[in-house]
Length: 580
Image (cartoon, rainbow, N blue to C red; front, top):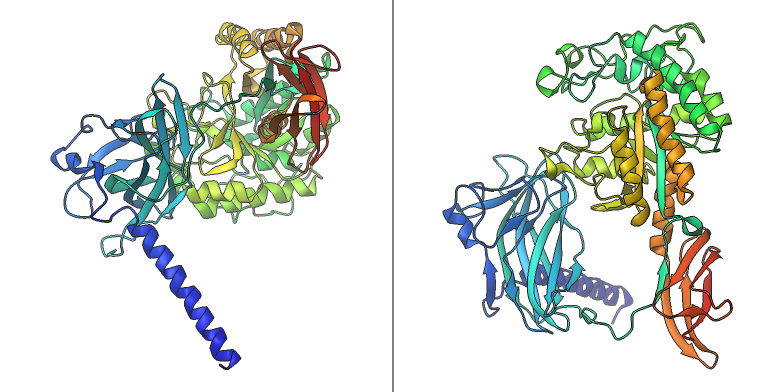
C-alpha cells in the first residue's frame, strides 16, 4: 500500500474515532436503556419557585419559559449560587451519569461544573468535582444551534447512601439549563472510599512558623482622576464632596497610614489607579483611547448621566510634572516603596467591573501595567475592585484577569441583599479559589471605620482560632481625623500584641495559602519505622512551614509534636514519626 494512502487512512481513522468519542460523550447519558433516577419534568408545571426537593444556594435561580422543547428551563445567574437536585438514595459502587443542556445569555461563552455530594451512613459527606464544561452563548432570536451538552459521570463510594448533584457557574452570566437527567451508567471513574484505611496524623499549618492568623492592611488610594471625579452615589459615603478636597485628604491619609506601620515594620498594600502612577501629563497622553462608558448612568448608581456621554479622562488638566498634585500622585510612589509597601491595581480608570465589557477590561489592564512598567513597578498580581463591583463579571472578563497574571482579588461583591454574587465574605475568613479560574484567589475584606472598629477587634480572636485571614481596608482619605487614626492604630496594635498574627501584603498572603495547598504528603513505614513524606511540587520554595502531629504521635528526632521546616522547589522531605 502506498505510504501516502496509508497515512490518509490513518488520519481518517483518527478523525472517525474522535467524532465517535464526541458523539458518545454527548449521548452517553441519554441511552433509552439507562434508568432515569431524576429528571426536570416537574419544572414544566411551575411558574415560580423550585420543585420539591430541588434547592438553590442563593437567590438567582428561577424557572423560565425559554427552553428547548417549549416547557420550562432553569435560569441561574450569579457566581455565588447553584442548583441542586433532590437527594437520591444510592448503593455503593453504583455508576451514575448526569446530563443537561446549557445556554448562556451573555456576550461570550461561560462554564458550568457539577459537584457530586455523596452522604454516608454516618452522615459524612464525600465530594466529587466534575470538570468545567463550556456553555456556549446564545446568538439571539435566529439562533437555531443546539444547546451545549453537559455530561458528567461518577461512582458511589463505599458507605454512600444518598447523592445530590449541584450545577455551579463560573461567572455572573445568565445560564439556562434544560433536559436535566440523572441515570444509571456503565461509565465512571472510581472514587476513594468514604473511610480510607489510614488518615495522616500530620497537619500542615497555613501561615509561616505556626502563626494562627493572617492579616493584611490595605487602602484604596485614588487621585482626583480616579474614583473621586467619577464617584458613584452608591457605595461611596463621600460621593457628593469636592474631588479636589478629597484628593488632598487622600494625600494626607497616605502619610498618616505610613506612620501606623513604621513601628512594627509591617507592610501594607496600596491599590492605586492609573493617575497615581504619573506626576503630570503635559504631553497630553491619551489612556485607553479616553473612553466613554455608556453604562455610567443614574440608573446604575451615578449622581448624573454625565459620564455616559463625556470621555472618562476629559477633565485631565494636562499639567506639567508637580503642577497638579491633586490629579497626579506619582510623586508618592517613592515613599511608599521605600517603606516596603506593595503597590497593586485598583484598575486604571476606576470603572465598574461588572458593567465593563471584555474589551474595556483588556484596555484597562494594559494601561495600568504600561504605566507601572514606566515606574519600574512589576505588573499587577492583585486587584481590588472599585465599589466592590465584581457583580456582573462575565466569564470572559475573568479570563482577562487570569491571562494578565492576577492571582489575588479583594473588594468583591458583598451586598447582603444579593448573595448570589458573593464569592467570599468576612465570615468565611479564607481566600477562596475563583470558580473556573482557580489560579486566582479571592480574599475576604473588612471595611475599617471608626464605627466598625469594635467589630474588627472582636474578629481577631475568631481568626486566630481558625487559621483565618482578613484584609482590613479603607480609603487613605479615611485615615485623617484623630478618631480615624486612633481606630486604625488600635487594630494594628492589637495584631502586634497578639503575637501570633502574620501581617503581610495581601498578595503574599494569597501566595502563601496557594503554596501550602499545593503541598502533598504520603505516609508509610520502612526498616527505620514510620514516616511521612511532604512534597513541594511547585517551582518556588516554601519557607517556615509549620507542621503538627495529632494524637499521640511525635517526631522521632525531637520527641515533639510540632516542627518548622523549609521546602525547596520540587523538594520532598521525609519526617520520621512514632508513638511513644
